[in-house]
Length: 261
Length: 261
Image (cartoon, rainbow over all chains, first blue to last red; front, side, top):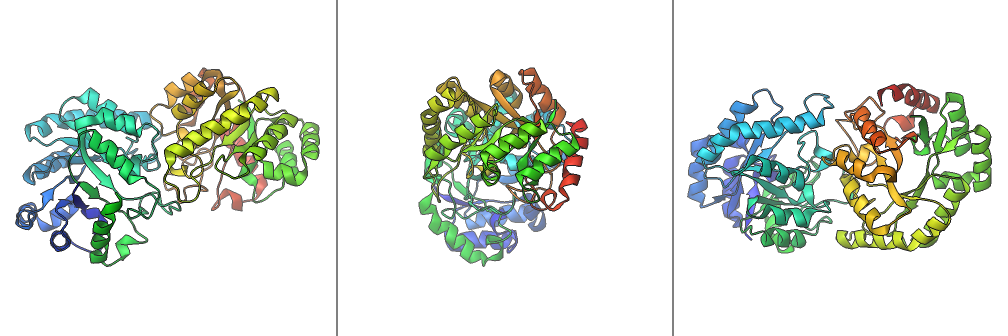
């Protein structure tokens, strides 16, 4: 599998134009840009530069956050952007519970209903929606927390919805193998990084592949057995380490460590 | 449901003798002592004082840690202590992956095999073993991470094994209601505290009931519907807050907040 850069990995150091150039310099052939970065560079300019660089767009991050007030208009814009960039999927970080709400079941119902509402538009635009289950410790950011739960939603919603499998979020799951198999062709993206045994923060302390305890080759085998033949997309949120380093060092290290994945 | 004090809640402030006195002073009628505290006070003296105080033992913490070298002798001692104290269950914190191992499946198999090995002794001593699934973010401390996984183990192991349901570890689980129902009479303990929306640490930043976003009354309903009629055991690991406070204030607050659970 080829390597793609999820641009969150160097978000503190570079703008999107620099990230595109960085991918070319390091022989990274895929990119998954975040929408706030696209907004700064401009959608047309983003498309122009990605095309000129010969990069494959492996996803657009992100739609979702269905608990937000302007969720619908924002998601419709996201679908349009993913369409313009020819992305294989719009990644949905589905949002959690607003404020200090305790209504987890209600939040989950709202997520499902909201996806159903935007799905006809996504289908028409030929943009598959990828529900990304987030680690249960991030339930306030996304109330879909297992692959099984995401796939239950997919089953209910019908064609045009799949899942993004991020090893960091799902590696602990006893049902990982069976649920990846169940997902089959609905695996729309595969994200990698590593779980640090001494994790210091619930959101922004992900490790570089090889620095932690996730058995990445085994998960890759599950994903490939399910029929996924896309890119491995490296996505590292790392306030205390990788976001502080020289971004060329970050990309070089991602490239080197791919041998461990 | 009555209130029990899991002694981890004031472990930094008091020894076990002081905790027993504290329970009496605050009208808390149950206690679940940790074995390191029992070791300091002595098993006989512990039993004598708990009996004199008229407290109900709601569990002994903990057996498990099956990845440790001396796991077997330690667990056999734990069974004996739980038996001596008349505990309704020995709580198993099952242990994670030793060192920087990446073999999660192997760790899980070892846990199951080890419980099978000590189970005949536990049955003979009439001490039920309670597998406690820990939050997936604590997988390095316990590689059983959902109620469903714990119950699959229980099904395979047969009589004498059940589960401890800690709201903090399982509240996020989309299958919580169905799995508590499945557990039925195998619910051997029910632990409470709260999930802080801005959790600062993966292990020791639990909140006091009412300070977070867990819908505790709903989970209590699940537990009671399953047939559990024991105590609600408050267990708060809180390096940055409750472990720093006056322990009488901690116990008073636990008592007051029970109305929210």
